[in-house]
Length: 364
Image 1 (cartoon, rainbow, N blue to C red):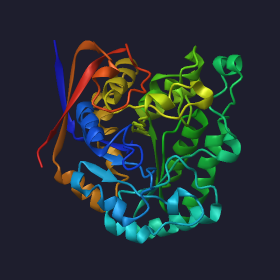
Image 2 (image 1 turned 120 degrees about the vertical axis):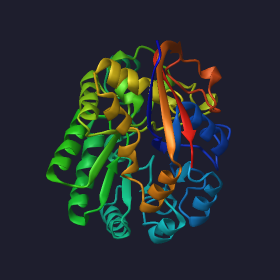
Image 3 (image 1 turned 90 degrees about the vertical axis):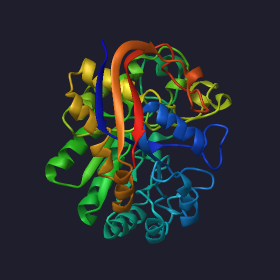
């Protein structure tokens, strides 16, 4: 017998629609169709397009889809990490928040300037917490597969060092800080302690980091390659605890790629997987069915919690949608990427079965 729940519209604050720049992988139209299929009332697009979204013109380019698509904007010019972008103009143009997602802003002085100016605008800074000096070309966490294939490893310190640095700047500036796609138990503990300290810090967990583990990888399949990489079983367990405790919200990091860039194994393939059309089902299975999370709290991690990192203008636009996400729990259905609305198929979930399915109702 089916059971149906209704929630305020789900919001995914971390998607890549590759438009402009790589529209064979995803466009604004196909990405929004995937969001509809997944049960999302609205999404926040990342600015790592080509060219990067570091100008008001590129924000306004997405305005035809507002407020279903709420664009974020670069923290630094060209996402190069060298000089702060024109944050004031980007905020006025309608940026939801600032991020150089896909790139870490390594320069302490630049990051502090970004956070000071963002704080004065009442805006959140969202950081891809992966220090390239520590990552050093790694492609996977240390695990049996990495050792068997002699793959370069990403140590957990690449994430935790980045989070520690950003928390120190958060203390100085008072700027709202959001840690994107957190993946390590140590990183979760840093965020948990920062929240206890009273710092304005949030973080997100992705469906793939909650479901999968590097310890379970068996083949050189780049559909399991992303940055940050899949963590250990212990990392996964801590991420689940943190979601259940309300420390972390959900986000997909939907990252479409054409098949030609994901068929080269871990060493040479692009990072990232698609997730919009499977995220609700996976997180329900992991957090509600397996971990016993309260279903209303699970819904808040997709709706109310993500809303908190939006700018005031983006919040108002999102609220005006009056969106509803309806989730039905019924017979288990098998994931078939061939049926996705997304233009890409880089998905590690083919053949898995889940009981939850979602639909979006937009009344505004």
